[in-house]
Structures are given as structure tokens and as C-alpha cells.
Length: 313
Image (cartoon, rainbow, N blue to C red; front, top):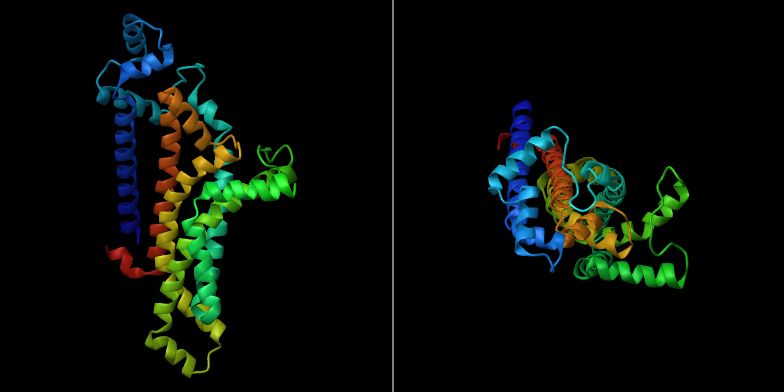
């Protein structure tokens, strides 16, 4: 198990390094364009060239990336091109918002998808068909459409929840919870469908195994069979799809934060991408990479704990 953990951690670090480098190259490849965006269309070419040299954008991209990575290792993500504020300070107030949204959404997605998948596989009949239709609808409708519908019906129409905005937990826990209900619901509706269907398929496959029929013949209670044996053997594929869902979810969070005006990392990424504020964008991208890598690593470790064969890969 230790060898497997070390191997997966090393792979995760290499993956994070590779993705960050590719992202850096894509963002920083045109220093003149970035400098002109900062100075405006009326700036002369000489002013643009001077600004690019001032920011170090005229140097080779590899040299820029190496300097940025050394700063990352020291905990320094640079400063904003526009405000001069440290990127770590800018993100300090944004990360808790996104982590709260993503964390709650992923927890609810895991629980609901497992329960719906098991119920669909075990019950069968009209319950199975109804849950599949609901999952298909949730998968087919984009999360921003779900978000808009929730705002129009539950916030603007019924006035049950705030339509936009965010209240920090330390200021008012109740208002914090209310401000997250609609965004979390929009994310969960889009995420539960694919994950529940994966759990359903895995549970149905395991329930057809010989050992399940043997347990039934011995008179074991159906609930004990499902949760004590079937679910343990079927959890692997479900965990894998949940790990993949985090990538989709992180992309969806960008849109959801814009719709609900949440001051999170996703909204910060979009705003500063349009401005060409490379240090801030790279800080946001690094945060997203770290979250995705940690979730994928946790998924691999959980899958290995459930299935010893995975450790031999």
C-alpha cells in the first residue's frame, strides 16, 4: 500500500507541474498583447514594449515559468498587474467561498448519487425508470439554466432565498447557509445524474454475482446484503466517477459563481482573464489544479482501500 501511495503522489505532483506549465505557456505566450491590454488601445508601441519589459513579459516563457514556480515554492504568487496587491491576499478571501460551494456540493453529490443508484438498482420497475429520467434531465440541462430557474422561482418569485451575494460564515452562519443553498443545489442537480447512473450500473452488476445469490440462499437480510456486501464491491466505479465529476464541477463553479455573484475563485478567474492579469489568473488556476489533484489522489487511495487489485497497477 505504501508503494502505491508514493507512486500516486509522485504522479499527482508531475501532473500538477505539467498542467501548470501548459497553462502558463498558453496565458503568457503573447507578452505584447498583455501589455497593450493593460495600457489600453491608445498606447504607443514603444510604451507597450516598455511595459512588457517592465513586467518581464519579453523574456522566454520557460524563464518566466521557472521564476514563477520558484515563487510558488516560497509561497509567493506575485502581485496583480492592476492593483499591485499580492495574489495570495486577493485569493485569501475568495478560496473559502469556492471551497464551501465545492465541498458541500461534492458531499451531497456523493451521498445522493450513491443512494439514488442503489435505490434504482435494487427497486427496479417504475422507480428505476423514474430515477433514470430524472438523472437524464439533470445531465442534459446546463447548470447555468438550472441556476437561472432557481433564482427566478425560489429567489425572485417566492423570495425564499437571496438571489445573489454571499455572507461570510463568521459574520452570520444562518445567512451564510442561505446564500449557498441555491448555488449548491444548481451544482448538485448537474452532478448527481452521471454519478448515480454509474452507481446504479455497478450495483446491478454486483447483484448478479454468484456470492449474492449464495447470501440470499443463506437467509441474510436484503439490506445487509446490499450495504454490507454489494455496495462495498460496487463502490469502486462510483468513486472513480465522483473523482471525474470534480473536474466538471470546478468548471461549473465558474459559471455558478457568476450567476449568483459569489466572490469566489471562479468569478475571480473570469474577471482577471478578461483583464489579462496573469499573476491572478495563474494563482486561480494553481488553486483549481491543486483541488483537482487532491481529489483524484483521494479517489485513487479510496479505490485502492476497497479493491486490493488496484494497488498492483
